[in-house]
Image (cartoon, rainbow, N blue to C red):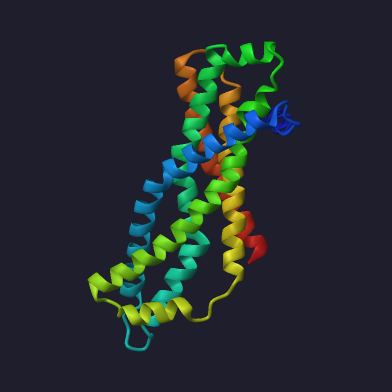
Length: 243
């Protein structure tokens, strides 16, 4: 385990050495931003809308009592969406969508000896292949999380409009009631940490792939699985530390 951790730390350190040609790296970062951000927007939008709607309907069902004001459903849906649903569930989905792509791409370059060719030419391969993906993840995954929060709360409002379990005005009142800025801080920290975990862990497994096509698939699977495990662990640590 310590051997794997040491290789991971050294790989990340090599990834952030000073680039040989900044313009080449910048173009790669832009390409990764489009791939990770725009490419994941559709799945994040669909998941966020439905999760927000389902969360609101379930809260309304559990709090269906004349003694409980209906606006409390909006407050609970708001806090749970910002704190947990949007950052964590989005990260788990993105681990499958972005992480598997990263691990497969780098793993394929390794088994086809493209990485060896780059190293022979004197290119810092961890910097060229990994750092643009990490930088893109650190910027695009928080942005996708913000979009997920907005769409999740909008999905809750649409659920109120169509289900009639909660009056839309009460839901909006609950969204505004007793808002604590700390939950936004927790959401931001989680999304940044999750972005780093997804891109760096999957890059590690892809970079150290050996064998052929079967091993590339295994590396992609390991990258996604370990990313999900570390996302859940980081979720617990960040929540217990800040809140």
